[in-house]
Amino acid sequence: MILNTGARTDTVQYFTPWLLNRFREGYVYTRNPLFPHKVTRYELSPDKIDAVLFCSKNYAPILPRLREISDKYHTYFHYTITAYGKDVEPGVPPIRESISTLKMLEKIVGREKIAWRYDPVLLTKEYTVERHLGTFAEMAERLAPHIDRCIFSFVEMYKKLQYNMPDLIPMTAEDIGRLAEGMGKIAAKYGIYLQTCGTNADFSRYGIHSSGCATLAILGKANGCEFKNVRHRGMREGCRCIESRDIGAYDTCLNGCKYCYANQSPEAARKNHRLHDPDSPLLLGHLEKEDVLTEGVQKSFLLSEGKQCSLFDENGKGDKRQCPNFPKSKRCGGCFCPACKARRSAACGYGTNKCSAARPKRLPPALRGRRSQIF
Image (cartoon, rainbow, N blue to C red; front, side, top):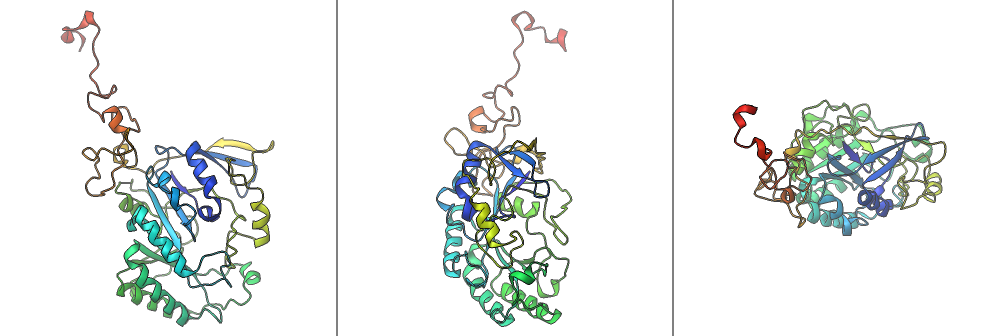
């Protein structure tokens, strides 16, 4: 199962203690947004989670303890840094600070696991096509050595945006073409792999790749593991990502971004935030009498257990001699034992005679030396 921590809210920025508690205790509850009394439980042990997806506008709160997750799980990090100021993104750090935090994140997880998101791209009197291209160029120059790719999208004109951003200027086909062409040239200049998100539009003529910002190919390449070749159903129209399970909740993010699709209003987010308990299995509140709790289906997309590379021996270090991803990945974390499926391969002996499951079965004394009569 692919676990998503940041599609419904900025869990990292506002709920890091809760998130770390969930991983420490090994399970989490999540409410169905459409049927609030339906609650699903997911196991968070490494053998149940293929990869953990993060998406945040500020990773600073989790950096001191990020290794509690990144050293045990396959991970990938989407870091949103845009051209907007406090007038559009009130709770988001300034660009300079965000770039500095991204560089610190890179030192912990490596550039191959970080995608810079420049989205959504929208137009107002302040944020013109020229301003976007100028800011994007400055950021691209500074971020290019520290990221795996850049992902962007054009704002979707959904209904509540008309109320939250009355100053929004609808984009014309000419605007979109100028932005795509300019961003494509800038990305090419700095050697950045640029792709779209959540759209069927084709900008390949500008060197821009198609949507699919959380695919098994991306996760596998970033983590040095192999996934099955399965259909990517996406999360919405135009999305080509692999399906994931989100553990967040809508109307809880305090960033206050005016273009946000996950909040009805900043007031609703502040009200709901008061229901948060860092020790609860749920992001908001606790189980209620009317709730129906069910076990979530957690199917694996990994090609084989032997390809897992996120587990540990007794000393917390993987056995590099036996890891199928070493030295290619340079980040060995141990592997599943193919005999006993133990999570700590070096401790069990990884399929050798030290592993009880792999050790040849000894016959009872009365039958020893009589194999020909048995088989």
